[in-house]
Image (cartoon, rainbow, N blue to C red; front, side, top):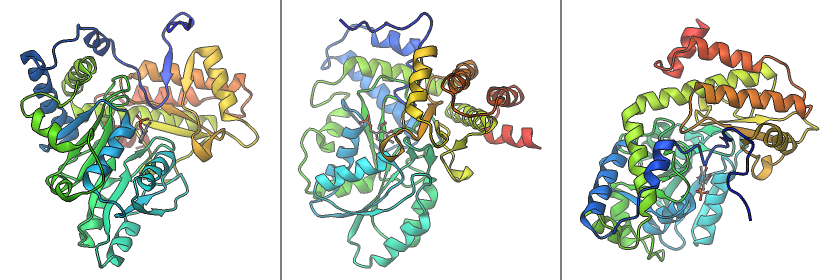
Length: 407
Ligand SMILES: Cc1ncc(COP(=O)(O)O)c(C=O)c1O
């Protein structure tokens, strides 16, 4: 039989970009006895969660919770709002954008997939040009991955919204925040997003198994006439029953306990502090990468991800062989290269339940594993990260800290 704790002594370092480390507080909350999901205590739990989630998504719109991985919430976003043959605009920012596109194809949508180099985010000028040329308003939705988990590239959402508005186009804006929500500043309402897709296993610090749609009034209106088949994922019944704190099916009660606790932790820390912490750890990681003389996959510093960093391994070396060494020697799990990046990059997750010393341990593990697997690199990466962390206190934002340390 497989033993789940079959690791060497000490904590395993789970530094893939999700699932992330689950805090002990959340683990303890999961451990409570399952209750009647049609009883009064459960209704209170749901209502408190839905209230708290609105603060995390920064919206007053309904949020739908699914007992599904993030892929389920991708599907829910599409089937609730679109009809067979509808045209959608998508962007090849990386592996996850490509998978979402594949799903749209399989659902019978007609996808205009703008090619990309897997090192950059979405160009708002292309959004504006495509929508501006679509005089008949055939494009029904623009779909963007906020933080491409395969590449460590973040697309700024407000310029995408502005591009849609400048083209005076009625397309819905749908955004995948699976690896950004509760790690990188994200504002469903202020940024005019119609459907936000999120998952439990990253910034929300839960195990995998829950996913979310935040739904604007415009998206709700679209769902009234949308004709893609849907049943389990249909928003209407879930939103109606949620008003009393219930679900039309048996919910994932214990994951909801964990979600309640995680929301309390995030709001207790304060979202601006959560985002600043992620900015700071991301900057420290990038300093380590530069110290090692390695290359960050993300081309444009304005698009650097604060939740993960993808690092290119020099030609002739296999990123997965390096990752195997990190796991075998140091019990450190790093993210693999996905799709066309397989073997070429490894990814360091610095999101979720994380602090300075966890980052230091992670970066030490990377540095030691680079040496052990004979990947050419310079020494001094960890030292560069430590110098940054020492100079940039955790109460300041990453941007402020960066400004101070480079002044
Ligand atoms: C950005 C992004 N979108 C979608 C997904 C798919 O989510 P899941 O694997 O939970 O179905 C992931 C998973 O890592 C992701 O990072």
